[in-house]
Image (cartoon, rainbow, N blue to C red; front, side):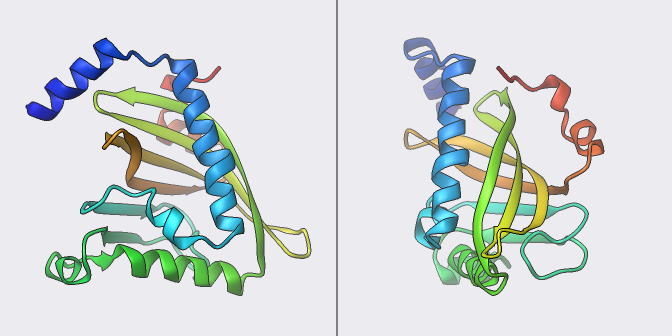
Length: 183
């Protein structure tokens, strides 16, 4: 209840427009996140996640982490190593380091990320993106779509859930793209 009152007060005192939120998410995903991948900056990527939080990663369709095969559902925890094990979840830092190691093995060069839509839902937002991964031969080797759920924590929008999808038009229906805000 305290969290709801705080968010309500913040929204009254500092209202954020859809266009401001769009610009914030555009910078966060299309610029910052893309650069963190290029730099193999696993700590900056890890800092995108809510601290001491259970993070669920859902992969619908094919695996997007570079392992291959069908997508899997991963349970991650961003607290300390032992807290992760007690909760039966993958430690967040191990997840992120493994992900970046797989990018290296794919001869990864860059990601082209496009913000497609956002949806405010009480104290969280859904961010819908499309991305391509490109290797050092400038070949696109993966295209996919993703929905990130972000909560406003410590004056930052932090990821609390991720879902990835194959890059097909049917994904728009699955994620409710028609209800999302876009400029």
